[in-house]
Length: 137
Image (cartoon, rainbow, N blue to C red):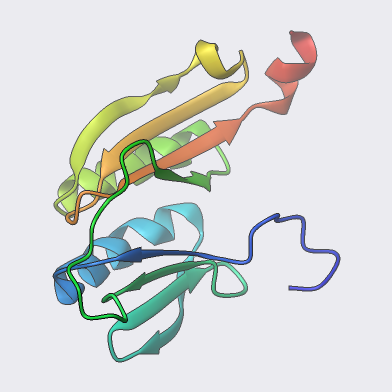
């Protein structure tokens, strides 16, 4: 994660109360965004394209994992079709719909996103920003 990396964040972690179910879910969903398992340890798996950016793990303190009200993780998709594939894969892998893929004009004319909840209840999203539409606006 050197200076040329355009990301602001180092990584994000979400906790799971059923680690095997959670990793099966993300193993099915993350490839739709061009991501894969980068690292795996007992109770923790990291996904990313080139380095570990998104972790799924059992909480280190041994307490139950929880979700945050108003918190969600937004993943970058390369196209509207990738957003659609992400949403479909998430539903097929046991996630629940939180907003079907489509334009979100309230976030800008160029925004296309889809929302789901993973099996632990974490809200996740795939979003595509259409630069051509942004330039037209």
